Length: 205
View 1: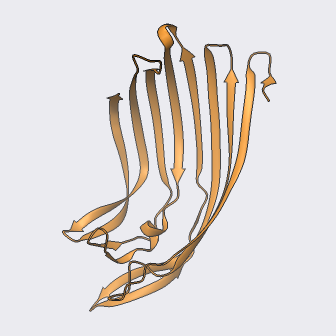
View 2: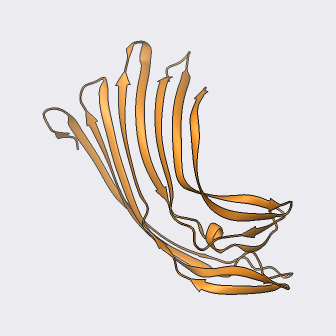
View 3: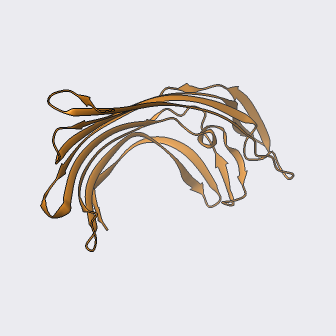
């Protein structure tokens, strides 16, 4: 139910998420893609919308998550030897966003949004260490990965009313500690952690 703040009508939604996952990737021919591993996730989020008028509103949202993982990091000293070392990393990624939405004449809607997003590494990025049949590559994860961080700003103008619909957006994203698999040979990929950014881009529909 909206709350009257005098300067705006506030609508709030809150929620929680819980997830448990156990993964294994055995192979009859080798040690498999990774050793058995598991992870537990708990998250809470809040979404707030401030309606200043029939044509102007703002949205503010936040999310916090805690991730506990348990698995094995694989290393390859040579001679076909595989060493599996138990690791139990944990992460607490946090995200927030704020946006302003303005309705114009001719059913046009403009918006500006700023986001700060943190992402915990996935089990495959941490624990992989073997042949990946689907991609025909040898994947090597990195149990020392950190949280990936992305900061972005987006401008948009859209019209969603028939018969003439369109959407134009321009955005800029900067990433701190980008987690990604990179090719180290024709058939091998390694998970790396590196800073990076995306230049201003535009797209339309």
